Image (tube, one colour):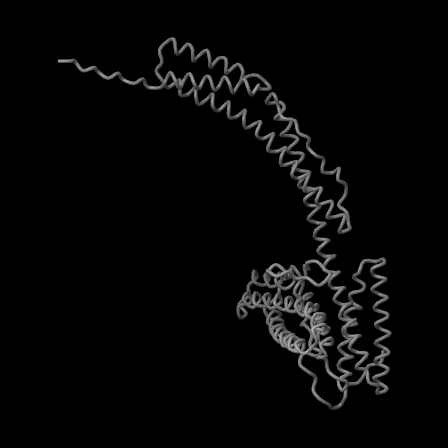
Length: 408
């Protein structure tokens, strides 16, 4: 496409026109050095202030629109302000961590995480767009989204520059097209990428038409505004789709890890089941689900959500089996411990010969049952209770009778 030269003279562009978010240094997991952080924070601070001024102008312009026009733009303005607040909150955290340049290795890693990590972790407001769910976007992605939203709002509220500044608006629109062009190859091959490529081709043709008209001196104001909106919408949709794919990929990884963990737990609970069946009777009998029977982790979002629901049910079934078999073994240990404690109490007490014989007989019966494998729990508990009751009664101090007063 042929570049359109900027006019040699004319009114200065309005604030915010052509201003885009600064390029973030590094990537997730790579520490950000102090010099890079300082440059980025300085530029980001100016960009955040400029975007707030732009949105303030849009807000004031909305008040001059008709109620119907206000209703159509207020939702997008609210979304843009929500994104601006999330970005501004993250900027405050970045400046606090930067601490005037006192950046050590730990601070450099934190700066990288704050820049390239999820932005919704430091805001109570849900980052979302109309007709889209919650977005797990990084700071650079949120900045690009806010750029697109702001350009769209300016065009819809008639805040973008007039015909005298058509060259500047075309330059900004073409920069947006190039960002879209960079996003298209990131879309998975198939119908979605073909659709995005077709939309990009249509926008390219419209841009060429606008450039050609501007070169001939025609008024392109009525063509640029809709084109700016369509470019911003497509860029926004591609960024949202990329964020959703990244979130889905992380969800699949977490789900696969959960499958591995539940499978390991299931194997350990089966060993616990075998130990319980060998140790006590009657033993509980619960089905232990086979985690691998659920199949591989699916790729689609809907299938993945259903798979996670089934995985949660498997986890609850494993919890129940674990608690039940552990409780059976704990009951056996409790009976054995009670027998030992009562025996120690009887050995330390002074008993008459008849009581000693009774205690020894009860202990012999209890020991015989405790030596049985598997242990009949109900019988062992009954004998242990009888043994404890007899020893308690035999070792309880007898009250001393009061002497009777002699009558005069």
